[in-house]
Image (cartoon, rainbow, N blue to C red; front, side, top):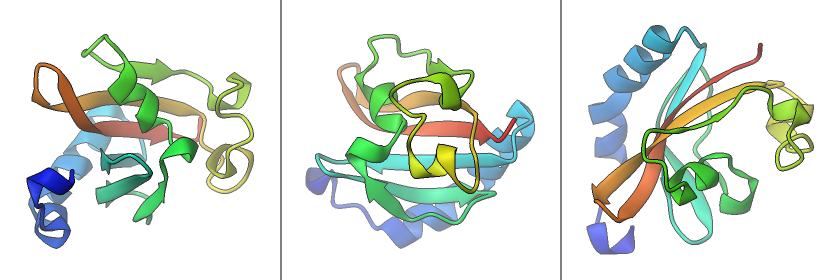
Length: 121
């Protein structure tokens, strides 16, 4: 991400309609566009939740960008998945359950983040 020299404020304004649209199309209350570096997940646009960043090792989107399947990564119930059941956003407010994310690719081999939708049911 550091090589891309991104203006995060400009990204938030540019992608706000996209995150809102993704949530509406998916029928979920939450959608995020996250960029992920070695240590941090940066939420550059969000709908339905106010979050700016979290440690990469706490995020679900880190698995989305590591997937070889570029069509997406889905977890139907985060509370029953050992990787996520104890995370603060699953065990506490907002008690998230469903996750679906697609990787954001620079080219065929470099994922820099994810567009994801989430729900508490």
